[in-house]
Length: 254
Image 1 (cartoon, rainbow, N blue to C red):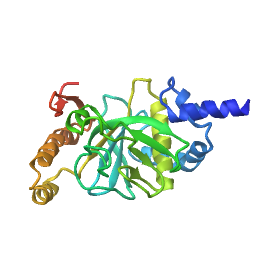
Image 2: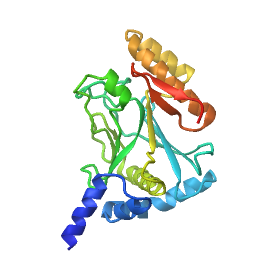
Image 3: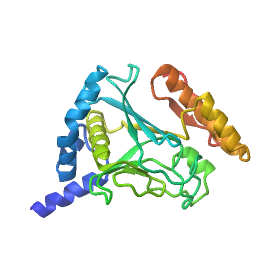
Image 4: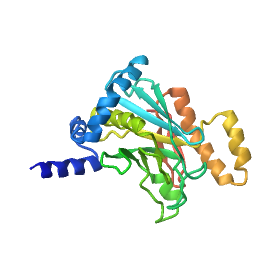
């Protein structure tokens, strides 16, 4: 009986999504997730309280910046509230260079607009959650049939295209996401957006001077700037579509 229960938890842990609240209960059947809760719950509760947000979280949003090696946690109490910055985390290591991922084996961390598509409490890297690469834009602009995948945020410091965090940090990230996912319905996907850097004037000077030999890469970043600007002004994650050429289109009406 215990063996059957273990298998069920394993299957649920590797796949997503159950009914509201059920995901959290199932994930807590894993000792690593239970330990993450014990070590992270009070820390997260204080961080959310410091910016006057409800905890457990309702809506969360992640922004990653490759050049700065930073991952931001933003949150809101409802889809109609402006998001507030809760914490900023350090990404231990990144492979590749600035720019999007276009094929398997390019060692690139993707850039673009994704969501969290899977949770794995049985990861070889302690805990991990998957980023939904390739998205529609990647499928249009990437190497057909050879996009690569398996892009995770995980513990430990090894990486080829993923985003490793320290084990203490991955506990916070994982437990935060499991709760936010568990508080929503099965159609809710936590947005996870990855930028080459903070898209400010100083960084644009760096990008244009360093990558002037690669106009398509510059054009891709100009496209990402639209979603970046939207959030900077509205403090809500951009709602996006992708056109037939792989370009992101920001919808300014919600």
